[in-house]
Amino acid sequence: MNRVDLKVVLLGNSEVGKTSLLERYVNERFNESMAYQNTIGAAYAAKNVEVDDKTITLGIWDTAGTERYNAMVRIYYRDAKAAIVCYDITNQASFNRARVWIQELRSQEEECKIYLCATKKDLIDNDQTPTPYEPSPSLEMVQRYADGIGSKFFITSSKTGENVAQLFQEIARDYASNPANVIIEKTINLSVLSNNKKKHCCGKT
View 1 (spheres, rainbow, N blue to C red):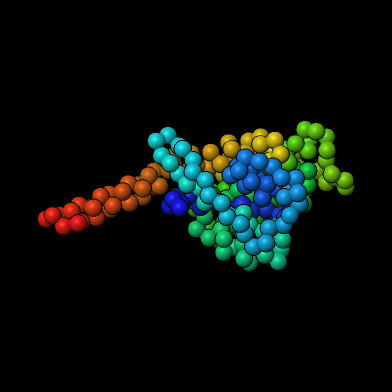
View 2: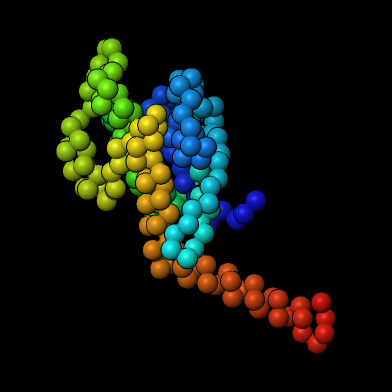
């Protein structure tokens, strides 16, 4: 398996669509039954992304959203470079919980870049909001909140694929554009070259 350059963690309440988001991005498909299955602990997937002249491997952790797994989830987001914090666009409580996840993440991983993600846009587009329906805040308010915490905001649908690939591509692009990450990559490459020269020095292999 290729070296993982970028650790990404998915956070949010259960049934907000984290697993479906990952499935749509990695396997380019949507499984209706999967949308109602709770992740136990965490699931993992990896995918290569091309950014300019670089190939970045995203190592993506899909974490459980139920409260009994909260302590375990903190283990999985340790050292993450990016976090996608999801909420159900039709559910106010899930947005409230997303804000709590962001607070907890910031207290543990200050350098982790946050991407706020509204899921299930297709329910709004097709007027299929669930009953009982507890609407989330207006998208304008969520955008202001995201701006205030320095987060990018994406509105997605795993069912249609809308904005899913764009979300992960933006994460990879942001990572590649960080000079600190480029320096680390060059240092690793120089180290490899130096080791190779030593192996071939004086005719030794």
